[in-house]
Image 1 (cartoon, rainbow, N blue to C red):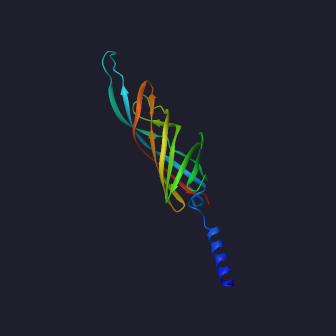
Image 2 (cartoon, rainbow, N blue to C red):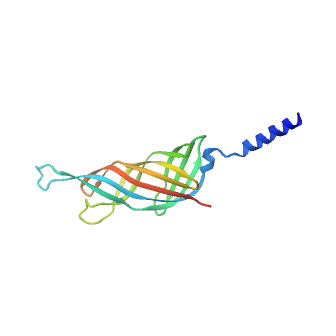
Image 3 (cartoon, rainbow, N blue to C red):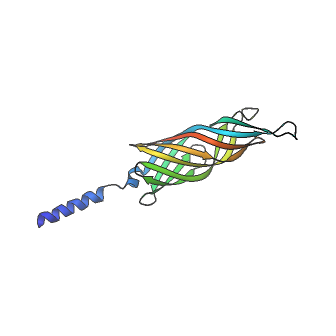
Length: 172
C-alpha cells in the first residue's frame, strides 16, 4: 500500500511540473517583420470625363523590429504584444493549436513605399493585419496577412495580397 501512495505522489508531482502548451511559448521574444504587398491603385484620368485605369504595383513595407511578449490568457488562448521600436505597440489575441499560433485581425498603421507616387515618399496606411505562426523550438515564424484600403496621394488603393513574415526568437 505504501508503494501505491509513493507512486501516486510521484505521478502528481510529474503532472504538476509539466508545462501547458500555452506556458511553453509564453515569454519574451525579439522580432523582425517585413515584406511586400501587392496593391491595386485606381489612377485617375488626366481628362476628367474619361475613366481612370487600374494599376497593380508591389509596395515594400518599412521593416520593423522590437520586442514581442506572449502572455497566457486561457488554456489555448494567448495575448501577443509587439512593441515596435520607434512605433506604436500592436496587440493581438491569439489561439494555440498544437504548434500553430493563429492571430486574430487588428487594425494598425504601417508605412510602405510604392511606384504610385511621383516621388519616392513613404505612404502611411491604416490596414487590418492577422497571422498564422509556427513554433520551431525557440523561434516563431509568422506569415502575416494584410488587408484594407488606403490612399497613395490622391490615388485610392486596395491591398490584393501580402507576402509578409515576422520572425521572433525567444530572449534567453
